[in-house]
Image 1 (cartoon, helix red, strand yellow):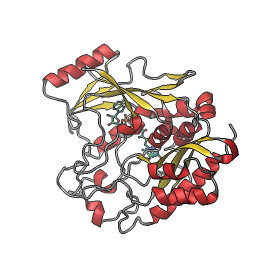
Image 2 (image 1 turned 90 degrees about the vertical axis):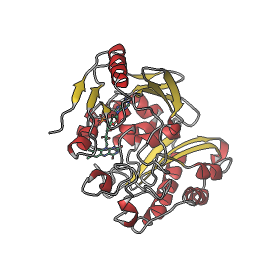
Image 3 (image 1 turned 180 degrees about the vertical axis):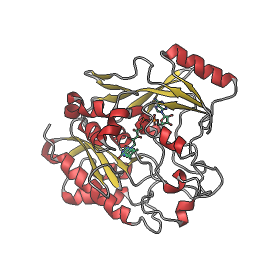
Image 4 (image 1 turned 60 degrees about the vertical axis):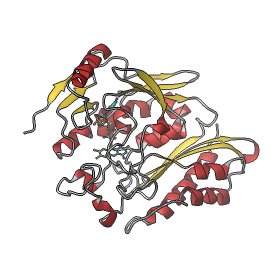
Length: 339
Ligand SMILES: Cc1cc2nc3c(=O)[nH]c(=O)nc-3n(C[C@H](O)[C@H](O)[C@H](O)COP(=O)(O)OP(=O)(O)OC[C@H]3O[C@@H](n4cnc5c(N)ncnc54)[C@H](O)[C@@H]3O)c2cc1C
């Protein structure tokens, strides 16, 4: 047995008191203190001995973090809103289709009923070498120990954003939809409150694969804000995987298009999943589409551009072709949406 303390604060003030007391004993590192929301991944990692927090702070009783509020300016989602509740919200499905689709295609109904949108964006990689502690070499788990996946079995691994220290794929789906819709994140801690662009939340592995986000260890995601923009309704999520449901993406594309007369793209926003170490904004593909009519040929050009910098390893080169085709399909299907 590995003992750990468990706190369940009921309001933001009680949470802040707990965080402050943890800090007074030294900064709560991600290894030392962890939040628990739905628990569908953190408990998994604790049972596998990958996550070994000394303190679990259960945030489920904190008020004002479960809301789904649609306003004229946009949509605010509390970090504790359950994935299924967001996916099934009629207004989300109608006005922000890429969000609802990315959630509906994730995990299983049981998991979606338990899991929160805040926990979803912070889930850790499913890399086998990360989740299996019998492998010593994992720079995410044991900084400086190496990366077993680089020379190992790397079929599910990333081809974009990789470093010599880590090629693990970012596993989630919802994050790509948030990037496509230019979402922001409200973050709170004992020190302050701040708002960051969602695209700035995740860090590529670089030299420090163990540091995955720009959040300080005591920072909590309070909510997400998704602006109602000219591309919001014409948005779509396409996910390709080994089986039809209950499976992570091999390649995924979240696309949002602002289109003008005659099928010309005013602005395209694209994020790729299943192929990169972080939720991946495909800026090169967006640039190809700007001010052009979205034909199948132009979509193929965008797919090429998105994967120009890809770095495959022994078993995952197929992801380049798959990723291109997934993006092409997502673009054509998104352009066909009537708004
Ligand atoms: C079999 C299986 C299949 C799955 N398939 C998919 C899939 O296809 N697509 C997909 O996207 N996901 C998939 N998932 C992942 C699932 O969606 C996540 O486990 C879930 O979304 C995590 O949310 P949670 O609330 O349970 O997080 P938790 O397990 O409670 O927390 C996850 C992490 O986030 C931190 N955290 C949680 N909330 C906050 C917050 N508000 N602020 C700061 N830190 C926080 C925790 O400390 C922890 O580190 C799958 C999971 C399983 C088990």
